[in-house]
Length: 201
Ligand SMILES: [Zn+2]
Image (cartoon, rainbow, N blue to C red):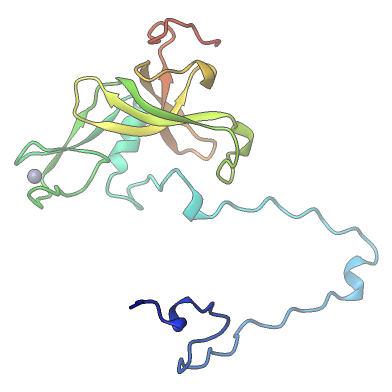
């Protein structure tokens, strides 16, 4: 006996039978353009759209907006850091305000190794996220830090993506943004390529 009922495979083109009616739209009706708007001066060029927060890859960084602001302050001072639980020693990434192991909040800021090796990567050739279209092609990937049990995601710069190889050595660099914020990226070590190829500068 089939378990598929006709109801289950029938495409839904409207509300379910018995479903409450959809509320009427509360959107205001669009206002028709007035004649005066286009009479004398051409319309001003619209300002560039502001990137929505949901697509902003760089989070809020100040102490007023996040309890891990020290990560960004340390990065600005040239230190790549994260939090570690004082009670059980758990090294946490990304930096956190409480330990998922013991649920305590007694955490230390500790320095991370600035070097690592590429575990996996992918080149973004098309369909870059909003605001990053001009940077195509670029590479994102996972990096195993040397001497720390952490595998971090990030941009990987330094040479053409075609010459990047799994196992290539990379190091962390702070990347200041135009709006005063800061983030990190990985950059391939020019002399540390697994293939021996020297990527162009
Ligand atoms: Zn803990």
